[in-house]
Image 1: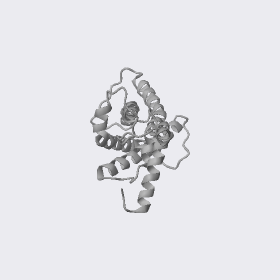
Image 2 (image 1 turned 60 degrees about the horizontal axis):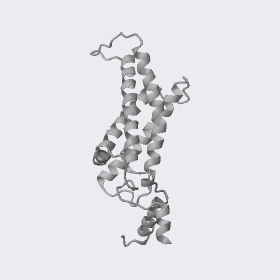
Image 3 (image 1 turned 30 degrees about the vertical axis):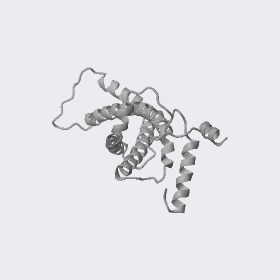
Image 4 (image 1 turned 45 degrees about the horizontal axis):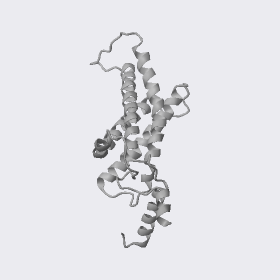
Length: 203
C-alpha cells in the first residue's frame, strides 16, 4: 500500500471499478480465444492486401502467376471479408479486456509499458485501417491523403504492434491456449470477486 493518500485513493477506486465490471466471461481464456480469431483475420487481411499491393507495384524480381484467372478476385474477396470481420472481433476483444484499463498504477514495469504502447498502436491503427478500408469499398475518398499509401503503411504498423503484443503476452497465451474453463479472474491473473460475491461478503 502506498503512503501517498492520493495514490491510495486512486488505487482503491480502481479496484472498486474493476470489481463492478467483473464477469465470469471476462477472463484471460476469453481474451485468448477472441485473440486467435482476430489474429487470423489480421494475417489473412495483411497477406491478401500485400498481394494486391505487389500486383499494382510489382518489383522487378517477382513474377506473379496469371492462372487461375480468378485468383485476384478470390484474394480480394478474402481481404474484404477478413477486414470486415476484424471490426466486431476487435470490439469483442476490447470488451473482454477493458476493465484492465482502470488498473492502478497504469504502468508497473517496462514490459508493461511496452505492452500498453503496442495495444494503443494496434487498436488505433486497426480501427483507422478498417474504417477507411470499408469506405474504400464504396469508392468514396473524403480525405486529403493517398488511400493506398496510408492503407499500406497502417498494415505494417498493425502487424508490427501485433507481433510486439503477442511477444509480451506469450506466456499467458501459451497457458490459456487450450483451456476450456476457469474461475472468474481479472486480466492480470488475480482472482476477483463478482458483484454478487462482493454483496454476499458485505452481508
